[in-house]
Image 1 (cartoon, helix red, strand yellow):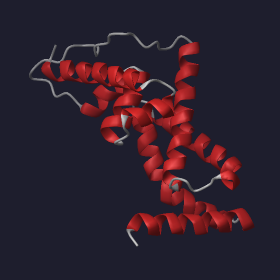
Image 2 (tube, one colour; image 1 turned 180 degrees about the vertical axis):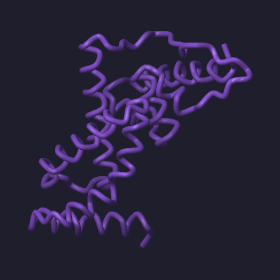
Image 3 (cartoon, rainbow, N blue to C red; image 1 turned 90 degrees about the vertical axis):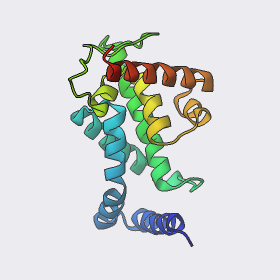
Length: 179
């Protein structure tokens, strides 16, 4: 039995106990096991905005608790929770666009050219990317999703995923080259 099997088995036992008892201690254990990963993923997906990441994680847990009884274990609990989180971040991005706070341009470059003597922080550069670019870049390059998986998760074509990844990487290269 590998560690993933053990983790899934432990998660199944905790979920079953929580569904039976609604025990706060059991929920806290599930929360403790998965929230650090969810928070780091959320932080990357929202571009480093701490309060938005916290809101996304909180909403993820609220939604997960409402639908936990229907979870079929076709994936790990962590993967299922990450899917809920990704959907919530996408909703937050759409709400932001509706408020005209951000639109996704076809071409994008990071603001303020970096000089050769300046240190360029990768996390900050990723945070400055438009939401669509940032989502695809983090899901592909950080989390290891394929373009097909990203397309299915974000309801875009694999080609769109590839295009957005290309533009995100191009913007990051420009930031590092000082262009």
